[in-house]
Image (cartoon, rainbow, N blue to C red; front, side):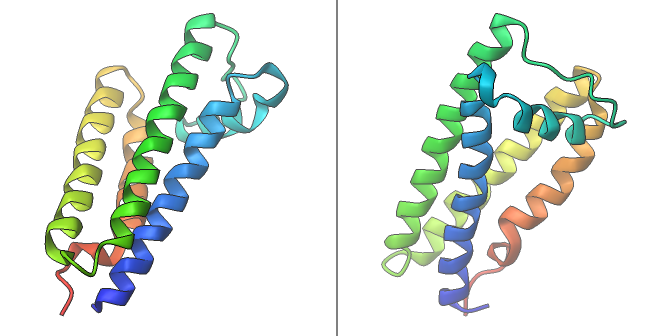
Length: 137
């Protein structure tokens, strides 16, 4: 793995996280709710179109989650800009933050009865971390 691949992957992960963040953020607006309902339906098998954002608490949490996730994406993006100065600490920080998300999110989903999202998270962690698993040479 090269440092350039790592730097590119950091930006790719930041973009992927920001897309999810924006979907959750715009999901707090009734007119734009459908895309996040589709994402939730895909995350919580089977596909049944039962997900909705009718509860005010769901809308509120969606707005908060979108903001937190977008902030995380911005942080990763800016870390990629300074990656060349301190590649290993930055790589570790991003990988550990992604693993932390994976463990907490997956465990919470299992405990709440949404086991299928934990399975989806396996694919997401592999995609988001990608070549960052290994130290650049």
